[in-house]
Image 1: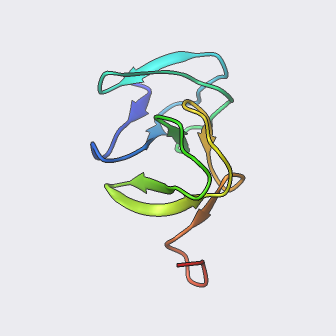
Image 2: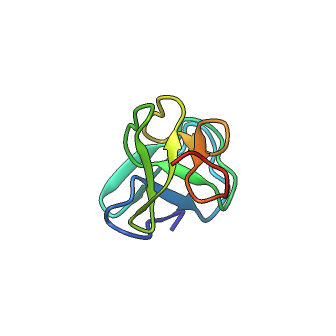
Image 3: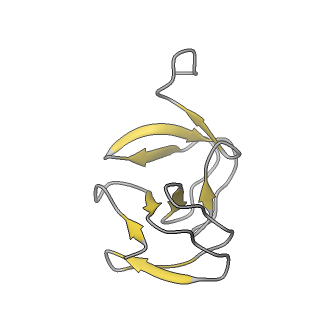
Length: 90
């Protein structure tokens, strides 16, 4: 297992090992080609996420996409703003 899906409503999974660009992996019948290197513990998009859409983890919105994110891409501070930290929008 290389990806951890925490809730069926999630649009991201957690990398449980370092993932390399071009690597193919799957979780819960979702097959992904990793689009960029993803460090262990970071999020990966399970499907395309449009700018402004919620990032869903634990079945709850934890952030908002600040740019379009392709399926298999690294989801982190370069393309997401948190909805959980004090002082963050919404």
